Length: 192
Image (cartoon, rainbow, N blue to C red; front, side, top):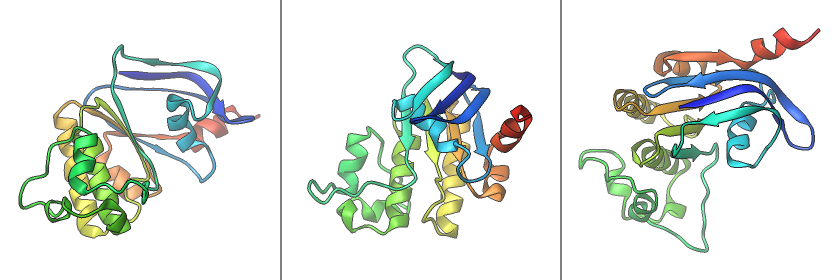
């Protein structure tokens, strides 16, 4: 589905690399490592927000991506409701008993950080994307929302959707990921 081959990426200069890995349909892969190592940069190079210095990234033709960012965007100039956000992301409404359902009529700029985070995660994991990039998905989430996210990730795996996660919560990653890549070990292996 997606393969990084000896990728060296960064901004004005390289931040990370060379890194090689691949992700297949039905996998939930966690990227771990210390702060500043370049985990999020590996996501941003896909969207063109970071620079690819060398190596290559190969995608399955026509692959649809969703990128959930660490901090949700709250636009007050064009406030959307929760239902509007679902429509923009082409995601179905959650079941009636889901904790998000009462929030669908609210403006997203009036939701708490955790409520907006969970709503955006719902959109990313239930929209049309075959590969979902989640940058710190547990940020702002309470225990109950952690559980709901774990269920969403299990459903994504069962539905053959691929998910790539950057997280600072090792216990959560061990629980939800089919495998993990320690970028700290990759970096240490290339240093003299």
